[in-house]
Amino acid sequence: MRLLLAAVLAAVASAAPLRFEITLDSSIAPNGSSGRLLVFLADAKKPREVLGGGFVPGETWIAAREIEYLGPGATIVFDPDEIAYPKPFSQAPSGDYEFMALIDPDHTYARSGQDGGDLYSAVVTVQGINPADAAPVKLTISKVTPTRPKLADTENIKLVEFVSPMLSKFWGRPITMRAGVVLPPDYATGTKQYPSVYNVHGFGGDHTGAWRSGPGIVKDIAEGRRFPMVHVFLDGSFATGHHVFADSVNNGPWGKALTEEFVPYLEQRFRLIPKTSARFLTGHSSGGWSTLWLEVNYPDVFGGTWSTSPDPIDLHSFTGVDVTPGSTQNVYKNKIGALLNLVRMNGKEIASFEQFARAEQVQGEYGGQIASFEWVWSPKGPDGRPVKMFNRETGEQDPEIQRAWEKYDIHKIVEGNWPTLGPKLLGKLHLVVGSEDTFHLEEAAIMFCGFLKSKGREDVCEVVPGRDHMNLYRKYTTYPDGLSIRIDHEMQASFEKTNRQVSR
View (tube, rainbow, N blue to C red):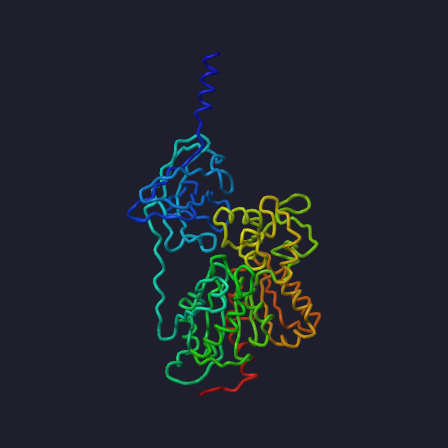
């Protein structure tokens, strides 16, 4: 009996939860590296060349750790139980798994996933492993994610980089505003001035959309399907997420810099008509919120916005959660303790708010979608970073932050300033959203649209039956040529109603 007990105790003592020995190959980082170290765990049902967090949190397990410096050729022992999602790795059941390590030097993984300059290992498969009691898994970081090819100007697509005095002063270092500018096919051969369309991308995007969409726009203009306008693809990406061109105590005066510095600069450089009625806005998702925000706050600068599936524009529904002052709603769970769903597809709820929040915390300390809102809307905390709107462990909201976020509630701003703002916005607001938006964004949009309808502006909004966040732009009864073409035609009608052809 004593021998059996001793054997059991020895077995327990030797049990070792899964650890990783991660080596940085000196050939790819001769000066070493630093940043956020991520390790991924996925089932080995199918071989993969790379692993990543994926769209639905929890499909791949992720562990993380900040590293100040890892020398060339050095090895670090990594504990995947300290910071992990959905659980510490040692709690994974026995099975066949794939593993991969990645160093994110510029902390952009939470915003854009694996991108240029990230260092990573080959995917290693281990069969029959018990993560609760396993020998260390060795991973060698020996690959570099290629950077995107440098943007090159074409005849009709131009890269613009502008160092903003306002933003540079705020940050104490040069801050560059960027845009991809798409010119009409006859721009180079004439002297005519053009109306402008400022396009703001969604979360995770940037101004490089000009090179993807630009050729089609130029072709459509040449063939008469679009009105000759200059399309300016703005860059809303930032280290903290998407700055949405809103002035912020954390990110700086992006709205002011755009309207007072960048727009005048672009108008001088590209023969843009410098009139309110010749400046239009459009954007989807975070870009939808950005463009609606800009129109509401700068109605004397912009002549209209076509905003689609915008991020929450009425904070009584922040993707389904009431975050207005006085609300005691938990961000994670409803009154009976069930998880509040954030993402739905094909009528099925597939991921909760808590899943996204916890996964984002592991992927990066800043720059993720939820943290991005805090960098724009929250006050600055004692540590120099924005105060979190809700407790990431419990889901409880912070009443002080609720009051701070009110300043960015577009519905509240419009309703509270309707006597002066209503006339300025007449004919300028255009909002389209799917009735089954993937992130429940139609709920806030419908609230805002209800107010506008009560003021006689029922023509402002369209809720498209059955459409979600991803398929809204596909052809529909009210836009048989696609939503982009309809928006273009409506901008043309607005311009022609108030302008004559201008040339110099």
